[in-house]
Length: 139
Ligand code: HEC
Image (cartoon, rainbow, N blue to C red):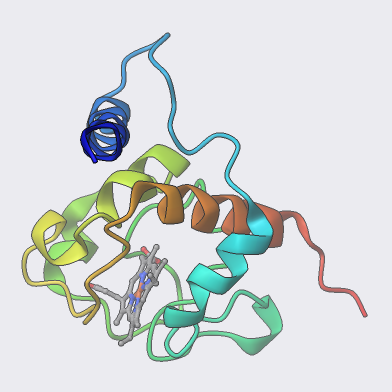
């Protein structure tokens, strides 16, 4: 019992440390499993497409999201003012931190989601989004 609690604590600590990582610190989302991430993404899929041919849904398209400035994708008209003004670039680290609690990270966001509180699930989700971002979708 004690050991389990300690394990959970360590995972939580690793997640926190990673969220404020500086060069050299362990990066918790490296090594995520994209196949598991595909399943984690099921809760996002009601609002977000990852195939660029499908365009935006209730939420903006997430194909090649990494490297884009938050809240600025052309053709998506429903960004909240706070996200539009946020001005940061989506890196895996930024998404890892944000997804822990989007409504707290961006107060006033129109994304009605509790995010992905579990650090392992977030790592898998990021691996999945990285994988779909390199797919060309030429069928
Ligand atoms: C109920 C619909 C809904 C769900 C479910 C949802 N989102 Fe969103 N998402 C949105 C909306 C709407 C926005 C725009 C938010 C804003 O402007 O404040 C958004 C924005 C985003 C952005 C920023 C995109 C950009 O262009 O800056 C990311 C990244 C994102 N969502 C990821 C996710 C992930 C990952 C999940 C699953 C854990 C998820 N979302 C679940 C509706 C949703």
